[in-house]
Length: 354
Image (cartoon, rainbow, N blue to C red; front, side):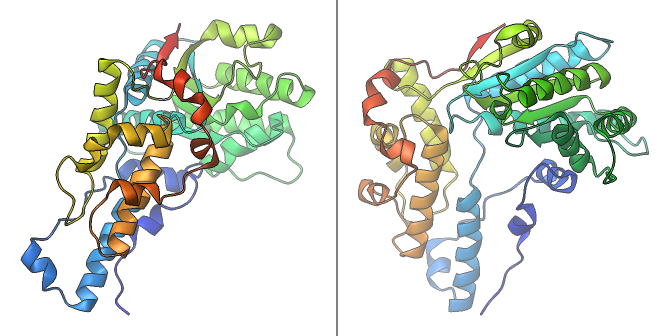
């Protein structure tokens, strides 16, 4: 059995660990070179296996597309970091809310990646520990102590078994200030419910951390307004300090919407490494791809990736409407026929409320 190096496996794992986040920031994946047809046909069995494995890995991860949402979050996030840099209190933040599969996590992690790259370039050769970005996900039924624990776990700060919430929080804030952290990304914020005592306390903990740490806080979660994040006294405090961006499915009704959707499909097609895929094949099926995915970029990416992987495994080296039809998508995409009329009228761009 032939083997190949496996850098993709090194990238596996949660980004909520400092070492994995560092690899994510440093990672600049390049697609494998598509061999000329004659050279490809002459590969030995072992060489073909290695070549196919590289392409399978590539399609398993594919590219991160600069969607309108990613661009919007990058612009807003960068401006907020600059505006907050010399503020001692009342720093402004950002909330990204929307349905699952609309690209929220991708948008905020891309914001974090680009910010860290810029920050380290600006820092130059200055020696010493430095951690400009922290990324955590909110655990279910979060408490103030578990939130502080998630931040401490990312940093690698050891926690004593009997340490109190106050002790952990104070140690954490001191460490983050020394490390120069100025952007904190908090994903799955919908796991905090202000209707429960634990959730209210967890919200207070985030507010306290935002006051103690000289950083911009960015939240992302599923339909956070409907879940009460901006309700009540605590919610009004969040609403008064955080800009809000809605992550929506892509629409496909107007000319502009169809152009944006087509540009997304074309970008994914350009990233494919298949030997018998005619140029423009996916774009020809743009309407079908929207119908299948409901305009959700997560569902679309999975649909294209799996069809490309299958094209390598079965030797066809192409994607057809029939092969796309054989891909089984997530439950939401497979059962969203009733929502399609509404989706066609929904803006494909991120809508922001400031």
